Length: 105
Picture 1 (tube, rainbow, N blue to C red):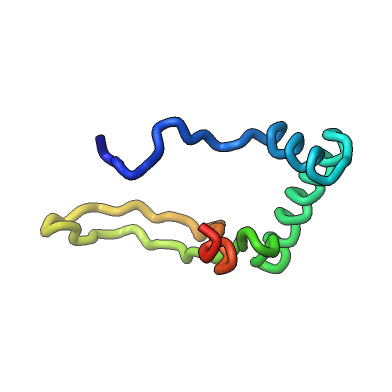
Picture 2: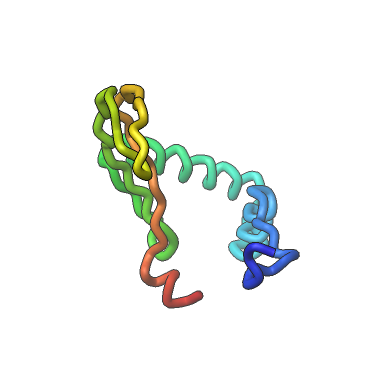
């Protein structure tokens, strides 16, 4: 009801399904492809943590950014004064679609 444009039966591929389709396409064993996917995930996490940015060419880019800490106090939200708790600084992780993928879809 909320989103009419979405396909009803569209489901995301599981890790096993991705590994199987890549194995069939590249003529490798499914276990080998699964280990490559695990290595890619580990590499992406470590690089995003270290450099703040990691790109899988032709697919997506993962970026991190520091969100500053907020002080406690009173804030006016929608015309009402609300007491706000202090929050610590945190790292936000976001993934962006690469332009090549946008052009393909």
